[in-house]
Image (tube, rainbow, N blue to C red; front, top):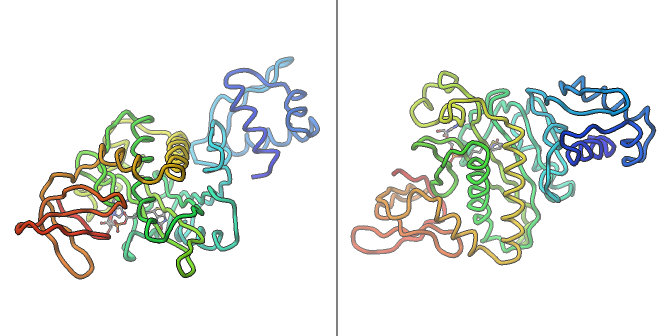
Length: 324
Ligand code: BT5
């Protein structure tokens, strides 16, 4: 996305329904009227519908079906999350691209978004099903100055941001299953994968992968996911705008992230608990080496899950799969 294009979209964002003249746009952006016209034509090619009225100017009527970086930009209100978007039609995994970018010092808040992932990843090299045009498959690059051991808190923070965005855009009320699942009516609609680049104890970057099932129909899920997965449109009964949801995730994420950097995990923890499904429930946690059964007591101030087993012993679980 060129700088001019970004400024043009910001101008349309601020204008809302008001027409903007070519002259006015050229002035705010600082380019020629011909350049404005060229960018408008390119937006049209991307699938935007623009109305042009003599003596008044331009107005955006409709945005394209496919997500484009330009469409996300139109209406984006964040300072740095999602300001730099790298969009691709088809990739192996957005995580892979994000890792490469992160080591090249791109700005914090850079996001990689794809329409399709050919080998989307879950935790522990599991597969994340990421079919074309129906979901949000994206990776966010962060560079917080926090100790390595606090990195999992960002998974929880991300879950809160995604839940808040889903509530805002769809009115649905999703729940969080520790540590990285978001559920609607007990079915998984979102998975989060947090990965690190670090040297010794210093974090170079954190890459947060977010996969949201938005507009898949039930039959589009593979057999093995039929009973355990769902999409927002299945639960809501209508098609949901992916671009609007992405912008909302960015907005809520940025707000929570700034709060977190200023005040630490505690305020995030309170929000997280208000959305958590597992607290107080009987569950089974499968860690790499062990299976712990008991009652979930909550999370610690660090974001670690506490489970009390039959004999009253309290276990601290850093990473596991949870069966409710
Ligand atoms: C996760 O792993 O839930 C993390 C998923 C992260 C995906 C994002 S998409 C953008 C970025 N780029 C990537 O390559 N990945 C990230 P985990 O908790 O291990 O759950 C994986 C399990 O969820 C699988 O074994 C399936 O059972 C199930 N699953 C796979 N695809 C699914 C889908 N689309 N919806 C719901 N469940 C799914």
